[in-house]
Image 1: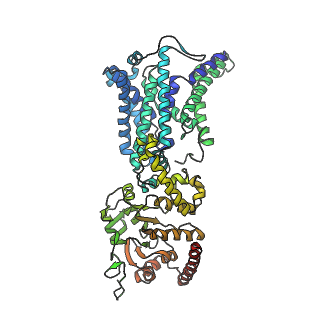
Image 2: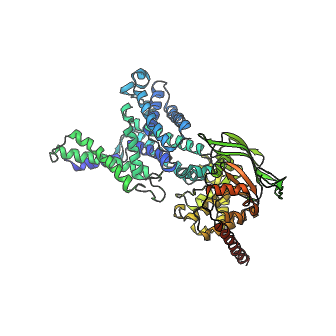
Image 3: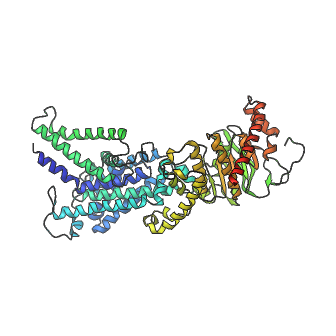
Length: 326
Length: 305
C-alpha cells in the first residue's frame, strides 16, 4: 500500500472544486437552518435545479456562460418561491417534508425518458462547459504545486468555485452582523416573539430560503463544471452529505461550512484509500474492495450521529447559540 | 346590570356598565366572536379601552382573556367582529402590522430570545431600521447611525429596568423574572402607544413584582396606555385605573377597581369558578395591598432622595 499516494490524494481533494461546491451548498443550508431555523432537506433539489438550468440553457438554448449562470440563479429563486409560498406560513416541520419530497420530484422529472431531448434522461447531460472554458483567460501550463497541481482548465474551475465560496461567505458574514441577521436569528428561536415586535416574519423566511437556495444552485453549477450532469447524483444522500458538512463545521458559523467540507472530503478519500489499500494488501480479508468503498459511508452515518449527540454546535459553533432544539 | 342605581365615572360617557362608552377610547371592539369547534371562547359585544390609563382585564380561568388578547393583536383570527385602534380598523391585519401601528404585546409564557444577547433582544424591538432590509443590510454605513440611536435607547431602557449589567449575556441566562422585565423593556423599544401585557406577574417573585408594578405605572406617566391580563387581584387594585371583567368569553362587568369587585356578576363569575375561595383571603388580600402600598410609598420617597 502506497501511503504517500493515499495522503497525496486526500490533501489534493481538500481544495478541489468539488469540495468548493459542497462548501457552497453547505453555506446555503447554513443560511436556512443555522441562521433562520428553516429545515431544508432538499438542498440536492436546489443543486439539481442549478445544474440542469445551466446545462439545459447552454445546450438546448445555446446561452453563453454568463446567461446560463444567471438562468441557474433565476431558476433557484423560482424554485424557492414555489416551495416557500405554501409552506413558510406553516410550522417548520412542513418545510422539511416538502423540501425532501420536492428534491425527489426534481430528480424524477429530470431523469424521465419523456424529457430525454432536453434533460438527457437517465444518462444526463455533458459537454456544456465549452462556453465557460472559452472565457478562460489563463495562459497554458500547470498551476499550483504538490497535491494541488491543476491544468489550465481545472484551475479556471478552481478559481470560480472558491471565488463563489468566498463571495458567499462574505455575503453571509455581512448579513449576519446586520440587523437583518438579528431578525433572522430571532425567527430561528421564536417566530411569534419576532412577529410581536413588528417584523414581517414570512418575508424574512422567504428571503433566507431564496438566498440559501441560490447558493445551493450555484453549488450545483460548480459541481458539474468539471464533470457531466448525472441525475443519480442528486439523490437524498447528497442533501445529507451537505448536512454532515454543515454540522461538522458548525451550523451558525461563517467558516464552518468551508472547513467542514474540507474535513469531510479529506476523511472520505483518506478512509477509502486506507481501507481499500488494506483490503488489496490482504490485511483485511473479510470484505471486498467494493465493500471497502461503501463502508466509509457507514462510518459517515455513524460520524453524523456522534456529532449531533456530542457536539451539536460543530467544530466552530457556540453551544450557547445553537443546539438542536429548533 | 343588577345595580339599581346609575353609577358614573370620569372615564366614561353615560352610566358605568359592561361595554360602556369611554371619553377617549384607544381600542374599540365590536361583536368579536371566536369559536373553537362548538365552543365559543370569546363573544365580546362591545368594549372600549381608555387611552392613557392602566386597564386590567380580569376573569376566572378559561374566561377568554388571552384569546381576546390574541385576537386584538392579530395572533388569532376571529370568526366575526371588528375592532379599531386609534380609529384605524384592525380586523384581519397581520400581527406584525398591528405591532407597527403602536400596539405591542408581551406573552404569558415569556418569549425572550434566549440565544440572542440581552442587547440584541432589545435592538430587535426597535422599528424603522434600514438594516433590516436584506439589501441595505449589506452596507453598514447605511444603517450604522440608526443602530447607534437604538443602542442608546436600549441602554437607557436596560438601565431603567436594571438589566444593564446583563447587557452582553445571552437572554437564556436570565431568571424568569428578569426575562419578564426584558420582554417588557423590549416592547418599549418601539415607543408603542398601547402596551398589552399578558400576565406580567406570573411566576415573578414578590421583590420583582414591586419593581414591575413601578415600571407599569411609569408607562402611564409617559403617556402610554396599558392593557394587562392578571389573576392577582391585589395587583389589579394596586395599579389599574379601570377594570374589565370577562367570564365565559363575555364582558360581564366594568368599573374602577375600588368598586368592580362588589359587582354581583363578578362575584358570580369568580365564586362560580372557585367555590373554595375563602372570604378571609379577600380580607387578607386587602391588608396585603395596604402593606404593599405603604412599602411603595416608602420606596418612592427613597427614590426621590
